[in-house]
Amino acid sequence: MSQYLSKEEIKQWRSSLEKITLEEYARKLGKILEEDKQTSDIIDIVMQNEKRLYTSRENNPAKKNILKVAKKAIKVQEEILNNDQNNSLNLVKSKLTCKKPLTAREDAVLSHFIQNKGEIVYAKDLATILELPTDYVYKYIKNLRTKISQDILENATKGGYVFKL
Image (cartoon, rainbow, N blue to C red; front, side, top):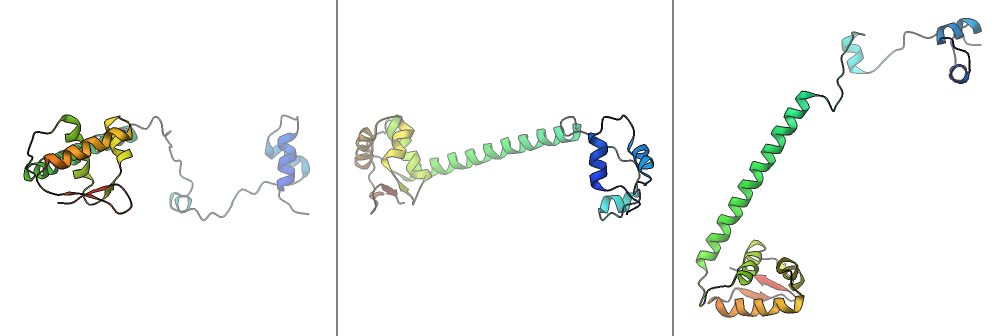
């Protein structure tokens, strides 16, 4: 028989209705508590049982500051990406020469083609952007082809359109 309390005995103590401490329960059984456990946790080895203060995650002011800085960094990054995309869109649009001015929807279709240059763009994708049924999108693609003097909008082999410049 072991001189230390077993797990089963500790479970019995927890489920008992007696209001005694674990140490008192161990004395009652004629056993002792194992106090010095070997640890492999680096923090326990380094700190050697020194008291440590823990803060809750929600109330940590350093974490709140880090989150604010991270949110600002993400916002600035998104602004830079949007500016870069707008600059590249404007650059590509200014190489393009149009026979007639484009309508707002035709311009939106052209912008989507430029953003997805070299990739297949399907009419259903354009329909969601323009918030129109798919059948109406083909009209804007046809008008775009006639208004742009270069032949840069090609039919893809598996359906859809590819913008090549």
